[in-house]
Length: 191
Length: 110
Image 1 (cartoon, chains in turn green, blue):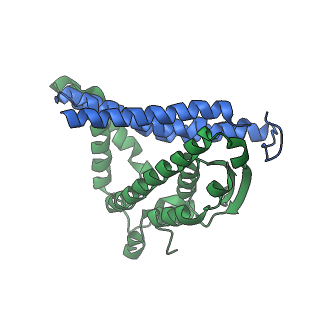
Image 2: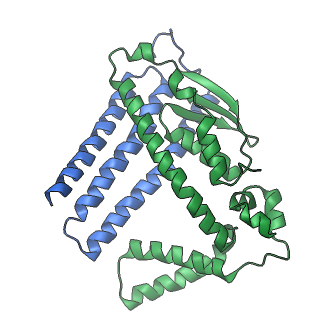
């Protein structure tokens, strides 16, 4: 049980198959999970309300407690898993921002190029992804769409991707490095 | 505070540059699918840069209220980053379902 937890929560909440084994006797739903959910909710509440008098704060505490009680189940992983996810996600997000910026420059170059019609060569690229979890696939599809030059047209639950690429240079690197990084962020690389 | 102003200006103008690129791209690209490339994504980075500039400029006179407003502006960016690829995918999917073939090299522009 412990070993599975160490492999990361990507496994734990991605596929329903793994999810079931998650509910084994060894894993009780921890009180800490409610606390973490509550504090995330309360942070958002404070930011959005911006009022610090006791009346509004107590309203926030009550409603956050109710929502945390109802929805803590949605955050399947344990508190420790949540932290692991954060640690793995931040580097991926930074890398994604860098890629988005680079790719944006490329598309902007295409847009303003006088001979734009000669440079672009739209193609539908098809490939099969090694990723397994639903969440990992969705993240991959959204990341592809966010990096300019490529739009995800279709994803099947098995990982068949159809991607519209604006020119050769945009479509070539797929699935490549991005997939490997997502697999790492979701703990699937060693699976 | 002059450095702050310069940073804000640079961010704002690069954001505007990408937003302009998005608008020009929609007009120049040859078909439905390729037009979505600038429409869906240059806008995302453009608004990210512009919103960051707003959030920084808002912190010029630091106070609790200003900080909260800046955080809210950054929340807008987060939601754009979630919603924009989803919307783009929805539009592409609608095009594919309607049976529109993508433009390929050598065809006349549509």
